[in-house]
Image 1 (tube, rainbow, N blue to C red):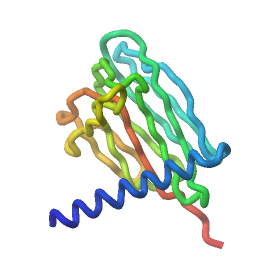
Image 2 (image 1 turned 180 degrees about the vertical axis):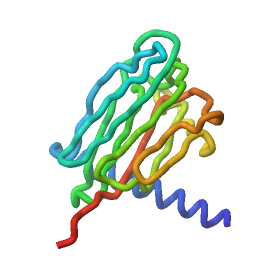
Image 3 (image 1 turned 90 degrees about the horizontal axis):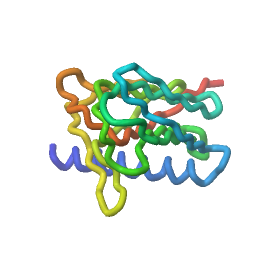
Image 4 (image 1 turned 135 degrees about the vertical axis):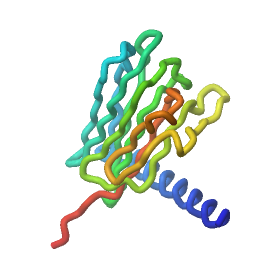
Length: 165
């Protein structure tokens, strides 16, 4: 069973690399936007749309001051995969997240990972434990009672839904 899990992880990483590289290769297939994550305990939302696909990040957090974050959305060259990444470019967030949700419209989620720390300045990505969040076909959400309130990056990849002729 361990070999199967390792193989699945490798396939997911390869898929992520292909989608992100393909999305970066074409300017009309990717978009990166800056936004402020605002503490105060109020539920906030930020969205980005690319063609008919949309990523929405909804959250609430406490402590500190606004942090600058980014959202990147991208489509593979064949339009079969839609990716969304939300992260703090400066690395680890110092905000205390009480909730988070990333939702894809127009794509079925095949891969998602959340991180408490991002790879910046010699640091490495630190993934949340899988028990801290839920992944469904359309969203990634914190798991009540299991999420430890640390979030610095969220990556979601979905297969686009195409109508058959």
